Length: 100
Ligand code: SF4
Image (tube, rainbow, N blue to C red):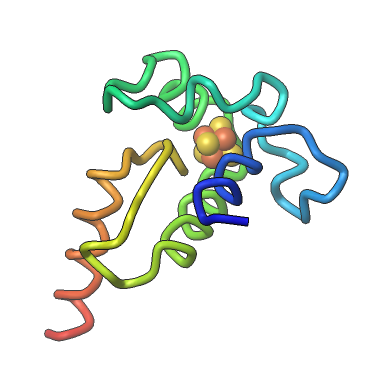
């Protein structure tokens, strides 16, 4: 399973999803709004993450852990309300904070 497949599975109903993913509201609507190729995520998806999701923090930290510290690695999808570009910026912030 590729990282993208693994990440896409978060947003897809599955009996194999562990823990917090069972409470992910996006699992009920599928991955289409959370994986876009344009980089323009629907407002409804962003709103769901920030205003309707009780597991947003776990979602974000799962993505950050899966994507690792690499600033060049592939990032895909909306996780924890953060776009791939925003998560990369967050990784830079965290790296700089650790180095300080
Ligand atoms: S933060 Fe967004 S992508 Fe993550 S589980 Fe919640 S609704 Fe889904």
